Image (cartoon, rainbow, N blue to C red; front, side, top):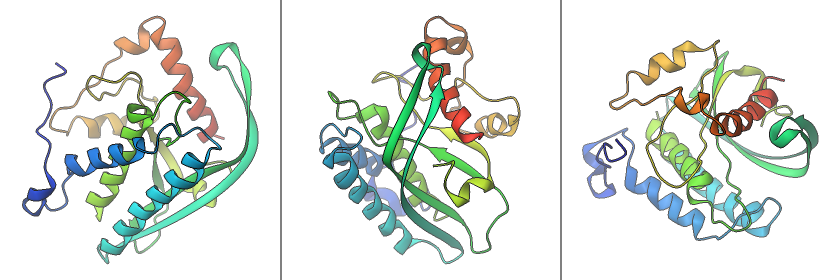
Length: 225
């Protein structure tokens, strides 16, 4: 099952696939991010070098964007605290945490938005290749191919659903393991992909269900406020 993956498209052939996801470019983003080493929140590697890399790639995409689309990037800093049930309960306190936010849409501002989320920091011992450099790379390439945050930012009021791109482990296929009951259309869109994969097995297994569900529910709690 893990080997049943689509063939990745190369940059040398991208002229044959306008508007398509180029796997080689996404991989390069992972390599560039992980070359910065561990990116712990608050460190120079995360707060300066990683942010500079992300904004440089995004601004390059903005320069190439179709005139029919509007892309805006906003780098913000926030401080606050919120309660979590994760790991038997805790209060997460943060100060001057940076968000790199990109808004893509038509020239006329839409009434609603879909939020895609990933994190670019990592554990102290890890360069964060899968968790979550791969998620960042996928989102950067989605943004480029598209041409076409949340409690304190003015764009938050437009968000009607969110998709969190996360990693656990370093291998295996991408899959949808949890979906909220209020947005079945997201699952319906997934079925239109060439090789969709979703399962409720992980969500119902122990202890993975507790670990993964609490991580995703933490984000759901924040974004629903």
